[in-house]
Structure formats: structure tokens, C-alpha cells
Image (cartoon, rainbow, N blue to C red; front, top):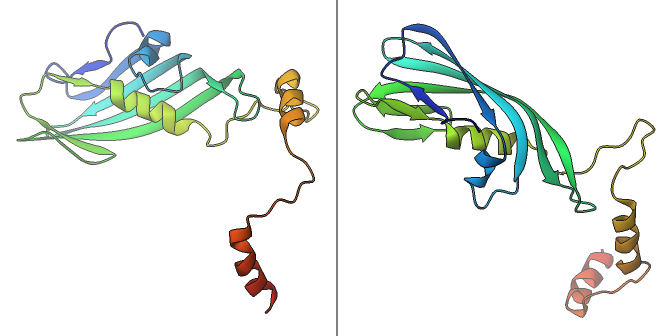
Length: 173
């Protein structure tokens, strides 16, 4: 991340304004609990300022390095998302809505760091696995998959005796 992720609200001219931010390892290091530790992304914030609000569109693209759910190895995950944030001016600060915040009229800067982080995290797939190659084969770490296969239990039909009574009721229908 080069520089801050702030938009100068007080000096923003009416109409269209554009800001570009580079996001890298230093950005993710600010979030201790983040599962993403590395990335090379660009965030572009397009701000349309009106008299009582700012309509902000944040476009983020690039890649982050995340852990595969299957083999646990890191892999590059593309990120490409567009998010909208409406900023209204009021007497007190508020974030009642995920897509709208209220800023006091005397606020000088808007820090986008938390918003950009959340947009990146929300753009990641729920199931995170290496993509298949052009032939449909897994690109997961084959050595790790073999180790997992060695330690997995196959063909064993273990049941918990506490559930046997319920299973019997279901089968008696």
C-alpha cells in the first residue's frame, strides 16, 4: 500500500473525482486476523460529489494469495469487484447501512481502509481451492493430497450408538 487510503472530503470539488490506491502486503499486515497476508491489487474510487452527499464507487482488481481448503498450499486468487458506498453529510457519524454512511459536515477525510479490506474479503469464494488446469485436472499439491489420502479413513462404517435409536425410528416408517 503506497500512502493512505483517504479521500479528502473537505477539499473535494463538486462533480466527478477519481482516486487510485495500490494495495500490497503492507495493507494486509494492518489486519492481524486476516487470512490474506499478501496481494497485489489496485483500488480505484470514483467519487461523485453533490451538495449533500458523495456517491462513491470502488473498483478493486488484482490477486491475493490464499490457502487452498483442500491441500493447504497458497495460491493466487483473482479479485475483481465493484462496490458502491453512499456518503451523506449529517450531524453525527453513523453506519446503519452497509452501503451508506453518515459523516459530520466538518469531517475532513474519509478513511477507506476498512471498507476496501471488507470488499476484498467478501469477493473471495467461500470454497477456496486451486483452479483446475486446462484439462480439468486439479492443480493442488499432489504430495499433500497423497498424505491426506493415507490418513483418511475409508470403508469404515462407524456409527454413534446414541443415534441408533433415532435411525431405527426412521427405518420403521
